Length: 258
Image (tube, rainbow, N blue to C red; front, side, top):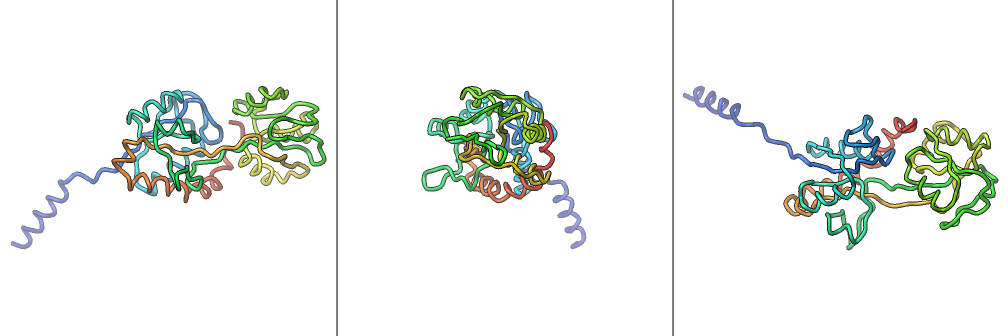
């Protein structure tokens, strides 16, 4: 009798469906933001970019299946506001954007400890160069500034009236700088610092302040954040905990041409 009951219970358990994993649908701009989002268009590149790498690590920790959808940036925000997307990458904070979705907040402000990344562009120059960046304009700029092809800083530099040469990689920029072919390099600090350390290059320094610096976040739809408050908090907390180790581990594969 007991044996029959055991078999009946085992059969019942085996026939039950496996517990479904949560799914998070994440929208991101179809224009790249290398090295955080690689490639252009609707497809997810491989490697995909550090922001997607980080979210995949978060998904693994929290047992969440992730679905990435690329589309124009304004459409991402619109679908996030409507609840058609659960989340959106990469967005800096503005008061206007709070109408579209939720940020990880602390004391009434976005919490930079739970950011996806800080997109910080820095000017690099040879040690002893007279080239300076005041925070508003360049001083003693005699020559061109090198920047990676498709980096958003290229347009900013041109709007400042600086002559720019677009190159294929961070390595190309610094080769040209050391050869005296350009006056400075504008690059992501996280990428350029890692490259200079790995290559053992000396004689190059950063100008201060950064050319541009902003914290970027994973936004969650207000519908998702309200319906899954604990899960939303866990996602943002995991981002803060996994960001730096994930970046340190995977950054080397983004040091070549985008």
